[in-house]
Length: 307
Image (cartoon, rainbow, N blue to C red; front, side, top):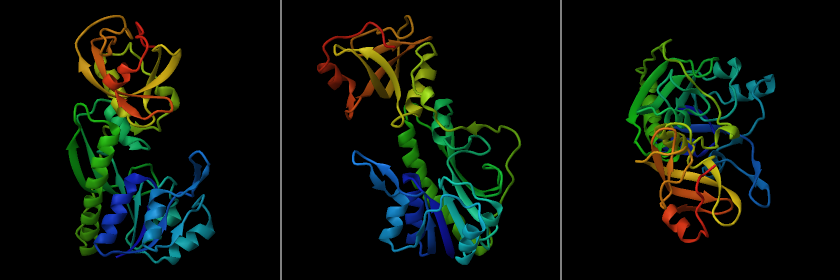
């Protein structure tokens, strides 16, 4: 089929790769415009942009699709279907109606739970036991369209958002090409989402990242792994160099009780409002991730509590 692909981050790359591998004609790629990045603040193209260029696919990076010029260009592709995966722009009705068979979106949750921008992180932060990927027919509402295919997965007790992201990306790529195959045969059946159980996965805000040790240990553990590796949950403490902010990338549940934030052992087991967690992997400002035992070999002192 003739496909317009719309996506931006790493999550989208396996889907585009799989579509190309199955012989579909990708006539255009839409992605977010390059942004300044790195120490030199040079413009960096999105992962989807770079992949499209390797396959010599025309790339479009509009700031908005809400104008007639953008709509006319989109219609000129004469696509059978648009595939949308974490694109980053709202698709207005003229865009949604342009492809002959509509626009299919790959979403990383079990809709209607976690509609919105950060479904993978929010599922883990909420302590969900399962999630999945869905292929949905897009409409004007936010992730409200009918669902055509779904794959469910269990979320590991210690799984981070980064690890789940990678699993769902690969699973979603396979699901999307199966959905496209069914669509081409006329056998892809869509079912309306339930009106019960709707939740929204709002964008992660910086203010959410600080660890609140007064919460129960399970909640603290879920919060940390839900924000790992980015943006990273953090605390402040003095390990002999003055107060510093340290990200926590991985924890495990531990035994112990104490005042929230109190260090219970030299291996950085920390008391929470109920129970405790043990820090496993951390990251100092300007440094790479490291295991806690490696970190502890280089510190000059251990604080009594973590802030």
